[in-house]
Amino acid sequence: MTGSSRPLPPHGRSAGVTRPTPEDALFRHIVAGMRNGVLAIARTGEVALLNEEGYRIFGVEASHDDLGKPVAEVLRAHPDVVRQLLSAFELHMLPNRAEMRLRPSGKVIGYTLAFVKDDAGEVAGVAMFFKDLTRVEQIEERERLRDRLAAVGEMAAAIAHEVKNPLAGIEVMAGLLRRKIPDIPDAQAVLTDIIAEAKMANAIVQEVLEFVRPIRLQVEHTGIAEALHSAVHLADTKVARGGIVVEVKVPEDLPQIQADHHQLTQLFTNLLINAFEAMDGKGRVGITASTMQQDDGGEGREAVRIELQDNGPGMASEVAEHVFDPFYTTKAQGSGLGLAIVRKIVDAHDGQIDLRTVIGGGTLIRVTLPVVAAGSL
Ligand SMILES: Nc1ncnc2c1ncn2[C@@H]1O[C@H](COP(=O)(O)OP(=O)(O)OP(=O)(O)O)[C@@H](O)[C@H]1O
Ligand SMILES: [Mg+2]
Image 1 (cartoon, protein in one colour):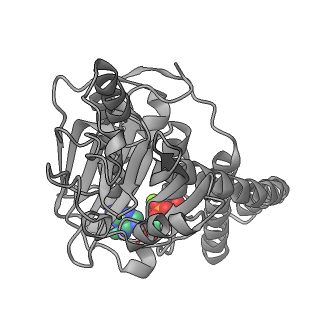
Image 2 (cartoon, helix red, strand yellow):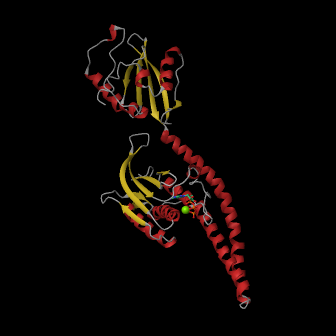
Image 3 (cartoon, helix red, strand yellow):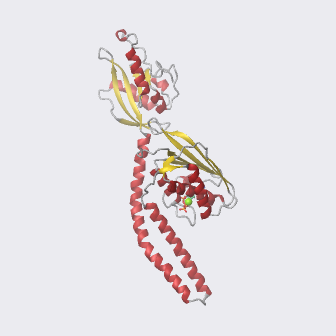
């Protein structure tokens, strides 16, 4: 990307032509190193400047001969941006702190336009200063979801609380009755069922209460390998794994992360339980981990990425769309909270989770967790 912020040779007015000075180099470096995207075009519509961050946000490969080319050609993939820039010359009031969605990637940018004037005060071009707002949007979306969950959660907690006592009553009274009629086996069997069902309802109530309780993280240096190890162990105690093979590959030098060990263990346990339940006693779950730079709309931050791939039945897209919703389940005995809790834990760690699945092609769940969460510095 060398020379991507070299200014265009001046257009038209020869009065502007001067020999490059050390200040020019300084300005070039400032623009090149900016954490905002900068794009400038001359009156003729040719690209005068596009810095590295600009290329990154637009997702365009930098080429050394972009400068001087028509902006419509360089930003072929972004006709909206081109239109905005070219029409700016007709405007008196330029957009300030406006927002636009870039079509191909769905990224949202915040941008400001400004005229570039020459020494004589004439408009020589127009510049666009922009920033990737995707991360900001994600945070807002998450907050909206959190508000929604808070409302649902409050109601669920109130109901769960009310239901807990009568449930305990049913269980105790059925137990008493069972002891009173030891000689009627049919009635004994029914009462045993009642007790089992009441216990299960109680377990669901407990789970709901746990889900709606806000997470308080006990952050410590946490090893991913250790959390995965505990999770495999815990998942084994909760569901029968049968012949399913679990293969964990975590590099020795994977950094420890600032996280709540207990919550991470629960996160991976829920994912493993789902995989085991989906796979019906046979197949393979592969878990890998690596480091990466997480895109935060700025210069990125170090993160670890854990991928959990099973070769189970996968999911239809209608199912996959809803799996993180609380109470969404396709299982007769499921409460549909497993992945909602997973998402809650990932959010609390300022991480990300996504899922790729194909019917018959297994499911890949990818969890990205920052090594040091924002706000915990
Ligand atoms: N690895 C997987 N393979 C196939 N389907 C899955 C997988 N993981 C989750 N699902 C689907 O997503 C749904 C929601 O999962 P989630 O863990 O939230 O709830 P649940 O497993 O149904 O119930 P709970 O976890 O509360 O016992 C499941 O019912 C299942 O249909
Ligand atoms: Mg589950």
